[in-house]
Amino acid sequence: MDLAQLIDLYRGPLLGLIASWGVPWADAMEIAQDSLAEAYLSRKFCRGDWERPEVFGRWLRGVARNQHRNWVRSCRRRRDRIVTVEPAVLEHVAVPPDPEPSVPMEKLRRAIDRLPTKQRQVILMHYLEETSVKEVATLLSTSPKTVEGRLYQARRALRRMLDDKVSDTQIGKRLLCL
Image (cartoon, rainbow, N blue to C red; front, side):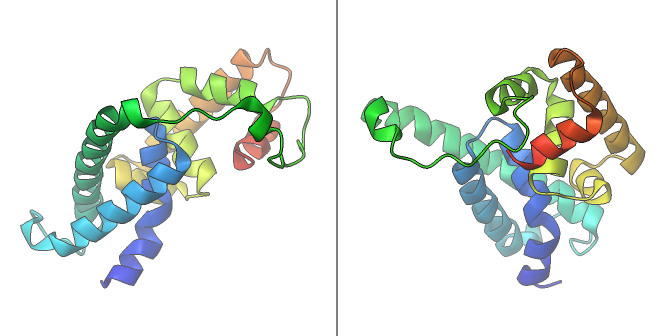
């Protein structure tokens, strides 16, 4: 497999995985790009046949974990240099219309943050990047049935946190809008 094929296959699930670690979306994209490049360039150190998805998926997850650790360290070093933005400046930023006002986006994001890690990972990987269950399972080194179960449990937990006012379908639509 060449780099373009690997990017097509793993970009979505990898972005979701990194975002599930609490990384802002723009930074998650950067970490994912760095991880894909690093994993491909150092593929000779991968144990096993790196062209097999289950082997390369584990390898890529490890590289991404290391890239994430480096990102966290650099954030700590730059913490004092962060500039705050005045709320008045933010008022000029256009906000997309809310497709389903019954579930506020902020409430849904807070509910996702309260999910257990494994459920949050699959929700973000599956819905944020519209990654298939099979691809999520490959990257997490689990079976597709395990991923389906975690998705079901996560949607059920989100529905409970949102006071059972919404269906699984509405939750899924809202997740696609995050």
